[in-house]
Length: 344
Image 1 (cartoon, one colour):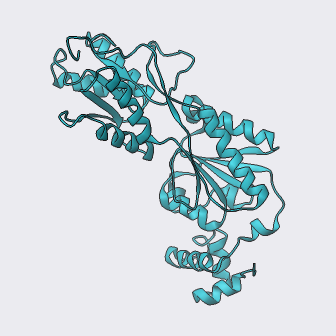
Image 2 (spheres, rainbow, N blue to C red; image 1 turned 180 degrees about the horizontal axis):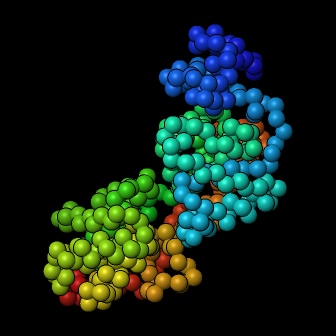
Image 3 (cartoon, rainbow, N blue to C red; image 1 turned 180 degrees about the vertical axis):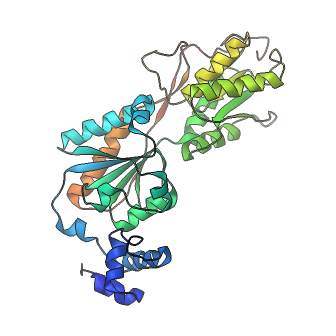
């Protein structure tokens, strides 16, 4: 492969070599290069097949950057992301790699500024844990850093480890149909991620043709917002004549909030209304209800993400892969079969 130089990029883009150096190093804004010019330089570099120097020349740092949109404490206290993180650390340790956290500030994300661990060459690659803006991920791709996206997909050029939200909801709906439930409501976070939008699609696609969708939106994906959304819904409807026999929630936190609100209103779960969650946040039984849900190996997601990134770094390859982690139905006690008299 012929090495493409920054001088060649400068000639093709009609700019100075200094401008090319600034754009390729993530310092365009600091050096007075306009975003449009920086983007044109990056596009020319891509078209010529430019390989960033830090990839060609520097020794491995044996360190992976973990880019988060929330504070570290939020992720480590969230059983979904904490389990993924555990899997990442386990797999990296097998390869003698380490983790370095990176929490880009909102304004830096908005300006498409590179994380410091990238611009200062402190990491060999990045794992993006939780959905980040499309253009921001694209900026990282343009800079040449190797990436793996976890729980969201950016483009076919970037490796991703995913839960298929639509397939997950399809399996949940099939399970509820087998128990005799046809009138099913759906509780979701209105600030939808790729995964949650996929689950909503799966819910809508698997309703019987003669049953209207009943979508209840919460202001967030936690227990408190789930409880508030159902409490407000019950305040507007006759709680003894609900238009659904079972509620499918986007995740276990929302499901547990719904159960609290149903109980507060004097409704028994599962006798009066069934509730099913998603992603099995509570395998150790810390919730106060044995919640039927969909399960996924979150630790395996971490293993897959870390292994894919380390192999790409060690083998110096850029071929992206899309890995979808299978889900299963976890039967517990929050959903029961419909009685012979009909839906409850």
